[in-house]
Amino acid sequence: MRRKVVLLCLTFLVFFSQSVFAFSFISDNSQKIIEDTWNAQTMNQLEDGVVAVPQTAIDNYLQSVLAEYPEFKQVKLNIHADNKIEADIDTAASGKIKVEGTITAFKQNKDMSSMTVHIDKKELLNRPVTSWLFSRMSIGMLMKLFGNPLSDNQYGVAVEAKDNNLIINFKPFIDKSSLKQVEIMGNSLVDAVNIDDITSAEGVLYLHTSINGGNMLINTIKNIL
Image (cartoon, rainbow, N blue to C red; front, side):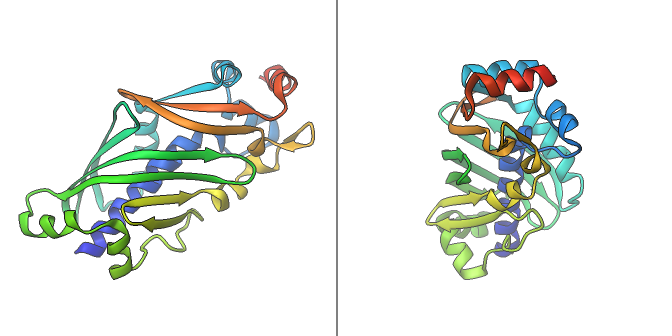
């Protein structure tokens, strides 16, 4: 039972964090990739250094992914201020799970792509005894006892747990993306945008970005759009 709960929680967090990254990684030929990845509004936000990712966009992405996983009956995600996230997950195998966490780090550049989430609270609803044990064990301890259920996952995403911190490494996933093959001014578009930090307000995440290549790169992409 605990292994299934750990798997479901970790899987959800990977899906959630992928949805935040998803605005940058869509396949097809080079021009279509650029057109699908960015629009004029996004380019203006990138130029200003802050890209808003509304909760609705994340919800839509999550639902499209979770549709392939019948063990998730329903997922409701709430984004709060101060980088807080809250997920109510209804599963076929383990019932209802509530997870609260804080995004403590979010980095994307040519050398690394990762997000760190501190699990503030976790509980199994309507299962008081099991929930008591589950809530008092760190994610790191649960993974030591039951293994890492997301090792060798199909997305190439690596997940490491330290105490109650989950470190999600997207580098293998990003390196396989078709956007990695698109080059402008000799640089891959994957490496063109840095995500330096993340903040949140109620219902929205803000990616704080910088551009490698400056205005020349931005103007080149705008001309394509």
